[in-house]
Image (cartoon, rainbow, N blue to C red):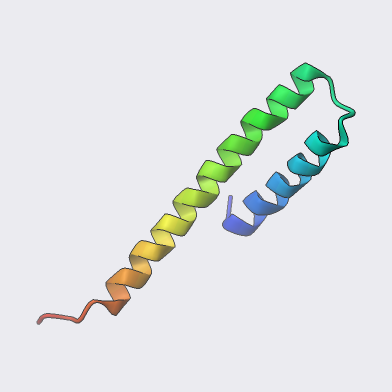
Amino acid sequence: MNFEDSMEELSSIVQKLESGELSLDESFTLYERGVQLAKNGHTILNDYESRVEELKTPNEN
């Protein structure tokens, strides 16, 4: 799943949780999914940050 898709799904989850219309079980299941999506997004951003840092490092050939 790419970053944009993860953030879109995470946003949808937040809206559902904030609605207050879910049962405790449904809320917890969505919360777990949200944590997974947030971790995925964080990993993707860290990977891109590493790639940017590599590009900024002078080539020592």
